[in-house]
Image (tube, rainbow, N blue to C red):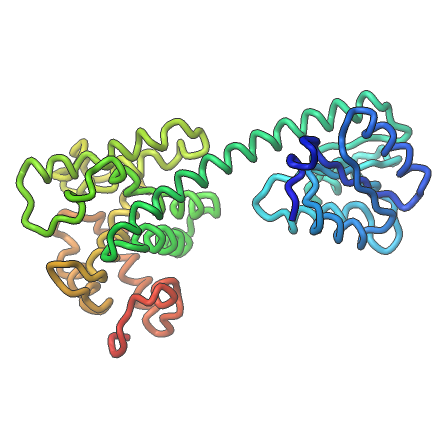
Length: 342
């Protein structure tokens, strides 16, 4: 699939209208601004073009046979997934209900027929600018996420740890009834919670216990380093407290700030539990990994030891106990459990 911004350096525009004369008029206006154009008279062909050329923006007429512009807009947005793909709906309808229906379908803007060329171009430029910013943001996030994965690849004992913590934090967030946005934030926080270790030497990270006090103090800096790495990205602002505070303890003896109880941000309290769960399951140079039953029994015994939020831990144990009846979730997919431990 091509990227629209690489087609001779020009953004690509998908125009959809079942009337050829309308298509040609819009094409002439758009091409006069130097944009590359792909056009379709039928929604089915529009979907094919979307999948073939990955356009940057679409201008879609509402009144079409078989599939109207609302349905096509919704379909294109679904195909784009999490990627921002702007759609302008072209309509002769001026009533409020039509616009509400368009907004519900995911439309980003509207143009009324007959349209003013300068208005169309101005709206296109504005949406393309927003899309470009989204693309840059996604690229920057992907770089940091890739660094997190690369960091763990250095150590066979921690490989996949952050991915698992991210996925299971997402699952725990869902179990707690948190919003979809909170769940996605927890996934990102889990993926990036140890990114600060990229600022530590490999020899220190791979050194088997016991460590000196000085070495432990250096390792304790990784939440602060991680926060600094992620701070420049505005999109990661919501998870910065989770990255900084995932090693705080409920009793106030954790690091880096010695926060206590509900002073510790919710995301960080969730990560602390899932991070510990994963660490105890995983094999280390100095010990074998435990079964999930052994880990849960340990966490149950230590529920009031001061490490974790006891109420959240109760919910976590409850969730894992429920999953135990049909443990088909993320941990089995990650090949956590050895035969005979389920």
